[in-house]
Image (cartoon, rainbow, N blue to C red):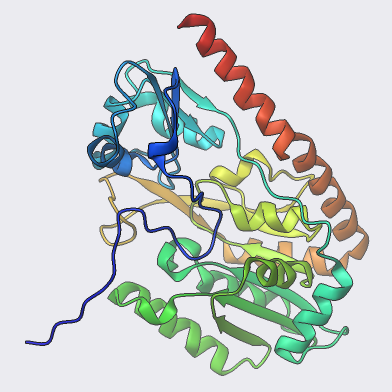
Length: 347
């Protein structure tokens, strides 16, 4: 029997991201606790952490991608006094089953990176992929652990080929990570389909690599458009990060990203709702639906953006202005503060 030891700790944050290194034991008593855990994990905070929850007003901040709460969410929902979400889509998910508890859209902020410039970022992209400034670079980016079928790269590839059949200088970068650690047969099959498409189209390249956050932002900033033909998003980090870098966005007109994606800020792709099957995603409830974006419409939107450089500039500027007004750290802090003051006035 072969045995391999693996270091593990309950406090085991991902290597990338913005996790705090402050221990919960250092926190003092508070009238309100804001718990940034998804619903299925919320009971773990009560089980494994010191009891800072009894007699307090406890708020859970949830992300979820499907149109109904998973059955494993209900215990966490019961343990809380209030639920916060980042989008109106999140309100629609949780409010019907919240038993009258407040479900509040407080938004989500993005980070500004004024040191990430278009010129330096394009040079980074050109070096990495041996492109040059004559290439029109489209980017789709996702983590393979986030379920390949939800991120839907096959539709992106099909739409790209329809849109740019006569554009030899068009390029598509499919940026992912953790591909080699995905063994689910459905997802493996999707990657096989991706490989089959790109094998006959040298304009498409797959990048399976965990980049530093700065390099990921440079990859986005150096691209000419960012594409997300997702089937559902709880929020849509990739899209709002692209907007913050003034990169044009082409996306499915569905789910969490609709709080910041409009006809004025993005090229919106039509869709139809389809019912999920078991295995399409985690914790799937019977009757749950998500979007199936129309490939032909996606191709039209991609081509419309390509054919109109002025529209790309104007929509990118409009998107940047919109998210800066509504989703900057100061803007979201006002929403947090406003709701917290309302709660404190009632305690």
